[in-house]
Image 1 (cartoon, helix red, strand yellow):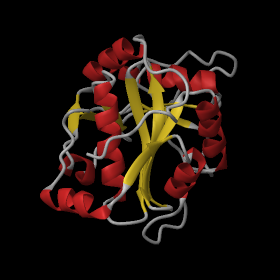
Image 2 (image 1 turned 45 degrees about the vertical axis):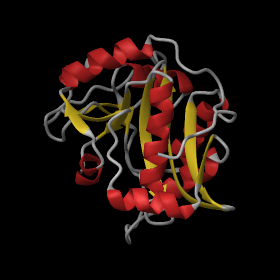
Image 3 (image 1 turned 180 degrees about the vertical axis):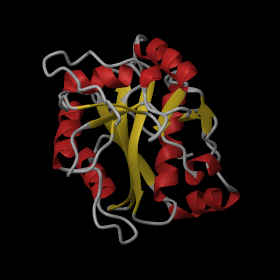
Length: 236
């Protein structure tokens, strides 16, 4: 029987060491606690993130290896470049955070549900109100065709989810966000868990120990405070 630590209800900054996470399922570290801004920011600063379904307790993860994008290393394919050049799309930041999160939460490919439940949405909207969670939106005139959202702690951006309403929408959002982050001196976008789609766009795998050490260093550095609403996002 697996013993999984339960987080202390009144000590939001206290997490088990990431190296103590399970091998199977990869990275499962602890359960319980809450989704308060204080706990979420402490988690990201220690290389930990929440991921659970509505019918589960809150679960906390730190997988090994970790999937990251170097912000100057996103691969823009020839076909995506052609799409960008002819699309007329434009990018914004923090103009429609709630819409992006809810679009990411919508079930995909006939799946019955989503891991982004009402509690998660409320938690990240509160982080957004406090200037810690951000979105990048892709627009085709007045239509939202793609987006990505996540949390900035110091100079680490922790990506949570992205969506496409048109082919290529999420890729353009990710690439535009990485260009903006690179301009600001953010070297990494944390993509959390590896999948073939992310690797095809240039993501790399980093051993957990190295990721956690770098994350702690980056989170202690000054970032970009408050809303990103007035910051233009470049097309990749």
